[in-house]
Amino acid sequence: MSALLEELRVLPHVVAYEWRKASAFRMGLVSRELLRGLGRPVVALFVYFAMFESSGARELGGYTFHQLIAYLVWTSVIFKCLTDEKSLDVAEQIFDGYITKYLVMPVGFFTLVLGRFVQLTGLQLIASFVFWCAGALLVPAYWPHPVSALALAQALLLVLLGAYCYLLVHFILSCLAFWLDVVWSLLNMFRFVASFASGLLVPIALMPGSVNEALSYFFPYWTVFAPAELLLGRMSGGDALRGLLVRGAWTVALQALAAITWRRGIARFAGAGA
Amino acid sequence: MTTVLHYLRIARELARVGIVRKSQLQLEFWCQVIMDCMWYVSHVAVFEVLYAHVTDIAGWSRAEFRVMLGFLFVSDAFMMIWLSQMWRFGRDLKDGKLDPFRVRPASTLFIYGFQQFSLEGCTNMLFAFGYLVYAVRIALPEPSTLTWLLFAGCVLLSCWARFVTVTLFSVLELAFVGSDLSRFVTELLHSTSDRPLDVFGARIRALLIYVLPVGALTYVPASLLLGRYGWLEGVGCVAWLLAFGVAVTWGWSRAFRGYQSAMG
Image (cartoon, rainbow over all chains, first blue to last red; front, side):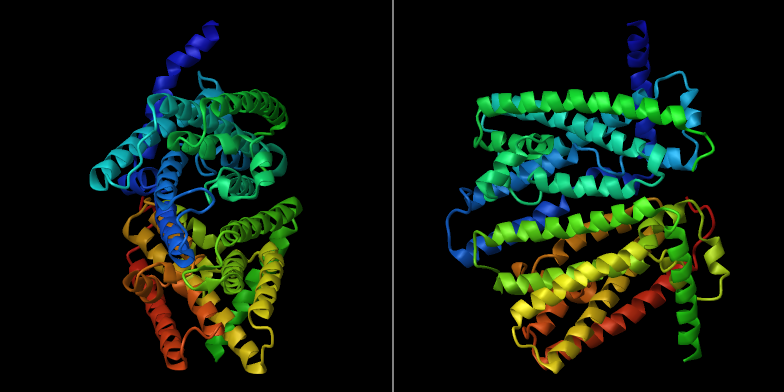
């Protein structure tokens, strides 16, 4: 218990350290952190507009054009809060053989990873809020609002838990560098699969029902698509509860897998790199 | 001619080194092949889902759209085969790792950009090329010899456009060290290149073809092949893209003169 308290005491310092790293290059901070994920929905907006115009339809897969705009806004806001393959440099530390320097620090290694996560998520939540406020001021007629405070709370909970699952997956895949040396392709594979399975590329409701059902057993679905649908009022509290159960199971499993992968990997690590 | 042969010899050596390097990391080879196949599948899946709801997007039918995706895959595979090191340009610049490339016997851009020949990229090129040929055979059921010649030209144009865009965006890193701007702009603008540019207005479309030529990766070659451009317009566009590319490489070399070790 005292060890946990000690880690928690150090965590704010780790977060501050990560913040200093992230803000060392200001233009980098703007391009990497603040503008992250804002280009894709703008392009998608034009595509959806063209689809509505070409077909003359008032609805596509149950979405009106305004709902699709809202979906794009919410998914881009949510996506900003997720870690990506570049968020952690654990694999590089393993490959280059300098991970050992972190092992002698008076803080657990995972606390360092957690510090990065807290810094990134905190910054992205603030950036997302500013982005949302700017949109609400500039284009109030089109800008979406959460259907209720409860939906917002449910969505936020799902997003934060989902972001943690993303962190765990990135950590586990990075730790595979203990065995495989180079893992960036695995990290990219996860990105491609997760982008599709989370509804980031196209709303899952537009996909066939069986695909929708199958994807609902995986955490990316409950990280991006479900929170966006909750905020749009297209999903209910019961769905959110199911999402929390699925997410809870995934979190426990991934946490255990992360611990095992790290323990086994570090046990065979030679320190001189690959 | 001597210069071209000199560069070809260097490219052959880089390819040989790339093959030897990959023999050390065989699992990574297959991982990268699978990774790119996943990327292809996710792109195809997204647009098959969209076309399940409409018959055309901005005047592009499903068959025509597949041709455009095919060009995207081919130009991406070209990037993977030869230009993957350009992804790390910003980082190498910041870390001051570019000095050795200034004293080698060819242009810095060529030696740096083409240093990481990728065997897995060649494998993925087979998949990409196969998809493109499949898409062309569906969109143009009875292609003539001229069509196949045009097809070869369009593939070259798409690969040339990849080289030009990557070079153009990397200049941003020279101006703003440590910014990751080239990666940001690449990801932002390349998200437009897998859509028909007709979804945008005329001005944005012109910008994306003639100034930030991501449209030349997919939209222009597909339009040329599918007969959506007239001959005069097509020839003019290609001539501009060739001249623009030469100007970009010249501009890159000029900008690189300001490089100093450990710029970050």
